[in-house]
Figure 1 (cartoon, rainbow, N blue to C red):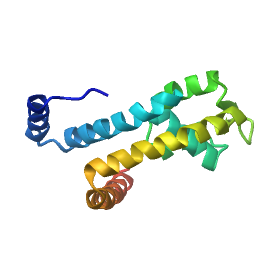
Figure 2: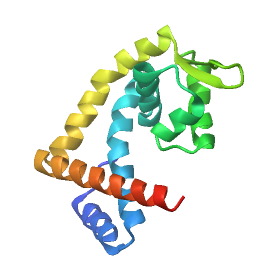
Figure 3: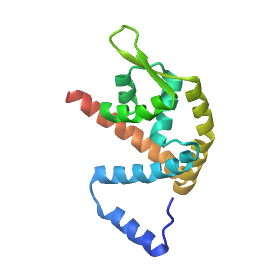
Length: 160
């Protein structure tokens, strides 16, 4: 992860403050947070998106790809791109579903091992982000995001 000098940090912070677009702000925050997780998880050959996917399949699998994409808020094409390297490394398997017409994503023994290997690195990244943001801000951020998700999901459903 690149460290910025004080003037570079001030310029970067100023550019982040200029935008009034909620999507831009949310994207900037998500990108900066993701960088901390990726910097730590890369030590075990994972990105946070791959780790989240592995953990979801570990906890709730086997699961249909469409359900997995929805749970992780990914488009089907993004899920496919994220799954490909996990399948090729043998961490997950994409096999037949319950009714013969569907597919199902399952975690393998190697995938379980990769989750266990990644968890300490995820904890380090989580701790670092919480330390930087501050525990009070993290709690407030989680509460605000949760509230916003509920409102946006309710609006999405009512406009469907």
